[in-house]
Image 1 (cartoon, rainbow, N blue to C red):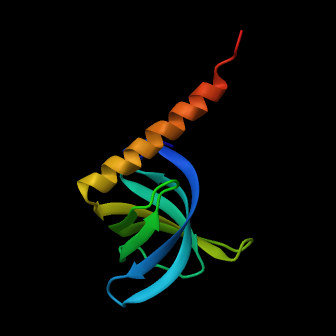
Image 2: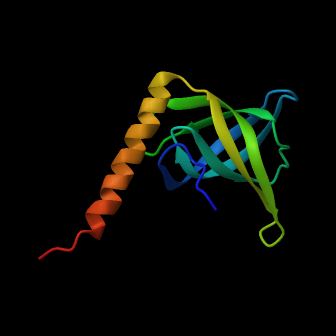
Length: 120
């Protein structure tokens, strides 16, 4: 299967508030991985495909709250865990937030690669 992701992605575990734009419904969720173009999160709320939502969260070690609008592009219910995995594509993201996310990802990937290099 061909990889469809547009940007590098890293594993992460941060709390996020999800605000469903069309119904003004707010739920809590947890981001599991993130890129500068989108994210995967888990929630106990079923968010249908093409739903527009706002995500509100902080990156680790940051005091800047991020508010990003996106569209649900996939979701999958886990009967084993009793929650939904959702994929979101960011459609309205301020440039400074995109830059902050990309910097975070670059730092995380650098740290991962640094750990993989054997020391002689």
